[in-house]
Structure formats: C-alpha cells, structure tokens
Amino acid sequence: QTSLPTLSKPFRGMSGFANRVGRYFVRTFAGVGVLTVGGIAASQYVILKEKKKSEDIPSNVVLHLDMNVPLTETNPKPFEGLFNPQPPIKIHNVIKALDHAATDKRVAGVVCTFGGEVNVMNMAMWQEVRNSILKFRETQKDEPEGSKRFTWASADTFGEAGDGTVGYYFASAFDKVYMQPSGLLGLMGVHSPVLFFKRLLTRIGIEPQVFNYYEYKNATNPLTQEGFTAAHREQMSKLLGSLFEQLVDGVAQGRSLDTDTVKTLFNRGSMTAEEAKDSKLIDTVLYPDQVLSHVAEGTKVLPLRKYIKSLESQEKKKEPSAMMKKDDKPKIALITMVGPIVRGWGDPNSRSSQICSEKTMREIRTAYQDKTVKAIVVRVDSRGGSAVASDSIRRELERAKEAGLPIVVSMGNFAASGGYYIATAADKIVCQPATITGSIGVIFGKFVIGRALEQVGVTNDGISHGDFADSMSPYTTWTKEQADVAERMGRKCYTDFTKLVMDARKLSADQVDKLARGRVWAGSDAKRLGLADELGGLQDAHVLAGKLCGLEGKELPKLVDFPKAKSPVEKLAAVLSGDSPDAVTTSVLEGTGAGEVMEFLRVVISAGEAVKQAGLTGQASTGIQMEAEDLGR
View 1 (cartoon, rainbow, N blue to C red):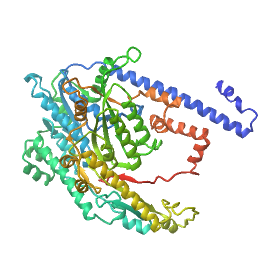
View 2: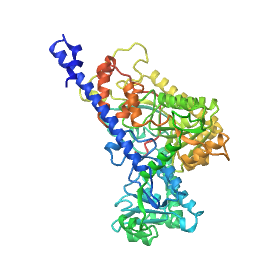
View 3: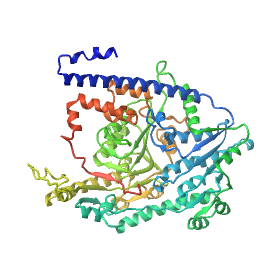
View 4: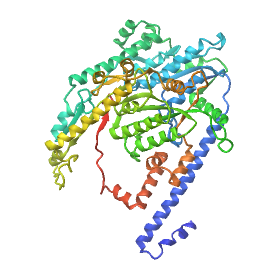
C-alpha cells in the first residue's frame, strides 16, 4: 500500500478525474504484476510437483490409457493443468510412450478405458493410436513366454442407444474387450448429416455470390443449395463408403471374424452386452473396476500421462546442459500445423489453433537455418483456409528444400484444400487410411446482406472512387464487370493449384483433373491414386525422413519440435519482455483471465489499438479461400 502513492506521483497536478483514472491504471498494472508473480510461482510449483512424481516408475506396472482424455496435435497450453483436471495429451507423446512400453520390462500391459461417441471424420487420429496398439501386440510375439505384455479394452458402453462404431473399432485392436452388463454395443455404420440453409437465407434476404472451382467443391453448398447436388452426393457416398470398409475390415481382423459376418452385425443396430458376447464382439461382461481387479496382485495401475512424464524426465537427463555443452547431435525437425490457415499472425483472441503464415514461416526458417537439422517432418491437420497464406507457407518449405533438407508431410484427421496445397512442397506424403485429404479446388465470393438489413430498417449507402472499390462489400451485389474479375481470379488460383499438384505428384493434366475439381478423398484412396506416398502415422514419417536424409541403417535422429517448446515460465517471460507476437502472447495466458488484462492494457497504451478495438477502422476478412467441405463438423 505504501508504494502506490509513490507510483502515482506523475498524476499530481491533474484534475481529480484524471488523477483517479491514473491511480486506477497504476493499480491495474500492480494487479498484473501480482498475477504474473503468482503465475510464475504456480507454474514452478506444478513443474516441480510433476517432476518429483515422474522421476521413478515402479516395476510391474499396468499402463492406463484413458481415451476420455482429449488427444491433441499440439502441446497443451501452459497453466492448463491448473484449471483442467484432465488436460489434453499430445498424440505424438502417446504414440512414443506405447512404442517404448512395448519393450519396457517394468510394464506388464496396457488397459484402455473410454466412453462417449467419436465423430467418424476424426477417425484418423484414433486410427493412429490403434495402429500403435497393434504394433505393441506384434512386438510381444518376439518376447519370451513369461514376459509377454497384455492389452485390454474396457468400456461402460459403446454408444448408449447411439453410435459407438469408431470407439468399438478402436477397442477391437486389443487382446481382450470387456463391457459392463448395462452397456450397449452400437455398431451403427457411418452417417454424416448435412443441413441446408438456402431457403432460410433467401427468406431473410441474404444473397450468396460464390464461385466454386468446380462441381465437387461443396463447402458452401449448405448455404447455396436445398439438398445434395449429384456431385456432392457422389463424393460423400464414396468417402463414407471408404471409411465404412476400413471399419469393417478393422473389426473383422481384430476379432478374427469374416467381413460378411461383420457387415451383418453392423446392420443389427444396438446390442446388449450378452448379445455382443454371443456375437464374439466382446470377451467378457465385466464392470471396469472388475477388469482392473483381474490385474495380477502387486501390479500397480499407472496413468499413461505419468509414464509419459517419466520418459520425458529421462530424456532431459540425457540431454546436454545448455550452459555446459551445445547440442550438436543430428535431429529431424517436427513442425506442427493445426487449424485454419490464415495470413500474418492470425487472431490473437482466437481460442482455437490457427496456422498463421508468419509464425509458421518463422518456424520453418528456424529449422533449416539450424545446421543440426537433417530433415523436416511437417504434421498437417487442417481443412484449409487462405490461398495466399497457404502459398506463403509452401514457399518457405521450398526454401528449406533448396537448403538441402528433405521434407516429409504427415497428415492427421484432415489435410484438405489449403492443407493439401502446403503438402505439395513435400518430397513424400504419409497419411492414415482415414485421413480426409485432397479437396483440390478454390472458393471465391461473398454473401450480400444488404437486403436482409433493409428488412429490419437498416439502409446502406456509400461513396466510391473506382469501379471496384466496393467489389467485396457485403452490402452490394457485384456488377457484371466485378463478377467477371472475381471469376477470373478464382479460376487463376485453381489453375495454379492444379499445376502444383501436377509437378509435385508427377501426374498429367488429365489425371489431376479427375482427382481435383474440389473432390475429397479418404487417405486409402489418396494413396492408391497417387496423391500420397505411404499409409501410416507420424512415426512412419519420422523413419521415412531418416531414409531421405541418407541415414538409413544408422541411428535415427531424434524427432524434435521446432521451435523447441518453451516452459510456462519461459513463455511468460517472453510475454513480459515483449519478445512475443500478439497471437502467441494471448495464447500463453488464455483461460487464466490474465490474457484479457494484458490485452486491455495494450489497448489503453496504444491509441491505434484502441481505435481498432472500438471498431472505428478495420479490414474485411475476404479473399480467395481454399476450404474443405463441411463434413459433419
């Protein structure tokens, strides 16, 4: 309290109102300081606490893989563990842990529990973990008889009178599958409902002016059509058919059943636990606690999260200290791109991941300027976005290749449209069979809301100098000349896109035309048609990158996040020093309340920022977009 009058001396001589305002901001700054110190202390407490927990793993443990915990492509945000008892786990860490556990003498087996429905469009991520379980089981064939590790899956239900298809497909990879007596097994197949809003938009006066390149580019169809067009129906049927075949084949192989029998079971609908047992879809009817009680006496059940922490702690002990020795070992850089593709630094207030062109280009440059980096693996999980941003990122990957680094793209759930555009820079593309990719096409246009505003008493007028000054205004329709230019710009972008695909995939114009026009493909079809090189996950891309950089037969360099992930304290220090772009600054403090305070202070300090926040100036977020279809989001 004694410090506040001293700090407020600069406000002496001001009016009473100004003095009160000044003291308010001083107290606000002081509050931010307290919050900052508290955040650092809290983060250090969490780090030390987790480190102590993870240092030693007892022998004879069973790893608990809880698939109720969300999987993510990126590292969880700092401080997330303070407010979320079950923060997401990075899928790459889960895969590495399962691979390590397959030969870890301390591990007796893996027990998996899960519940809830899984969208079939997110099947590729589950497929990647499922393949790790299959690999885990395959490894046990070479182990001595008394050392083989088991894999069990236990669920309360696979869809409570609903769809449990993807969840059960995942469970079928385990040695044993258990379900509690009241549970239901819902093998429902695949379904992707689409709502169409054209009549509603017409009724309220919103007019779409959109060019799609071409008939399969259906992202805007829900807003411009009253139902499926022939091309839209054709491509969705093909996509869902491919995913359905993967589900049937996976269950058949996992449960040692023939595919015709499995297809018949899919058409039965929900089954009780006893019916599922009689159909050989589960092994025993047991509650999850009863399953765990079957674990051998003296065996401890350990959450996979703690096992991951232990492995990370062991790796850090092996790493040379930054103060003692420079890390000059060869490495392969991992650059992760998740979310919509946007220009610049993106939206600093976004609570979801974005692929920001400036940030991503800087990460790529950091990798290829590092002499210890021998190759780059790019993990892409994106439906697309800005054509210009996609091209900027692709160009930076080309520069990495010019610097002599092989590029391998690993696709997640999606690598479509702009996501595939980026992938054309790769030497090799790896995807899961269920990855949704392709969508080689472009959308250009706008939605005119002028008539809708008139219906509620709002009229629009404007003054323009130049025939195209208002071309992207949402209040006026295009003139014929404006529409002609818009169509030409979109067509040019599509031509550029297909030319990149021709060159990257060594395909003719006719071949690309049959694969493009906006069409999406399941990864299994993309590989068969030449749009991808191999089926697999991030680990497979890592091995492939090692081969491409001439290290086949030698020790595979470690796959390292680029830039290296900072600790919560390091990130907070970057924020306070100003050495952090806005998009990064806000994400560091997101969810804590501090982000809003920091943003508010920036608004106060910067008059220009204050004007932006007040909405007095702005720029329309329009442009050529490359977005994949709305596939049941």
